Length: 157
Ligand code: INI
Image (cartoon, rainbow, N blue to C red; front, side):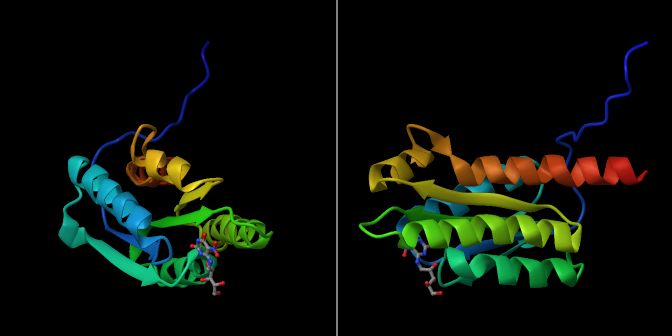
């Protein structure tokens, strides 16, 4: 007897979706936003059900994601940013805080808080992941949000 498999489908999810996007490295992050909005639209979520919240940098994403999650207005929150390694260890602190904080926001609020933050060694790597050679991580983050909303609703049935 095979196990019962529970997984999220890609049907249009109910509710509003928030994008929390950093302004730092904005020319990359703007491409992630475009990808996320495109993926949501193609999964049946029109732009008027999407709110875009801008924050200064990736470091600021977790607090805002957590606050948005707490007000129960959104089915999912998609976090978008781009951290690029420099000459010092600043990168490690910003990327680490964003990564841990976003994971914590999901656990603290119980709603999907999706990690769409690029952490790259070079600008070229970031460009490749923002709509060039390596796809668009904003698009992928939005598809993950749709799957997770549907999975959460299924396991609550
Ligand atoms: N913020 C980013 O989103 N990406 C970066 O690459 C970055 N670097 O390299 O410094 C960055 N720094 C700013 C940081 O997120 C905060 O906005 C700032 O430290 C104020 O808290």
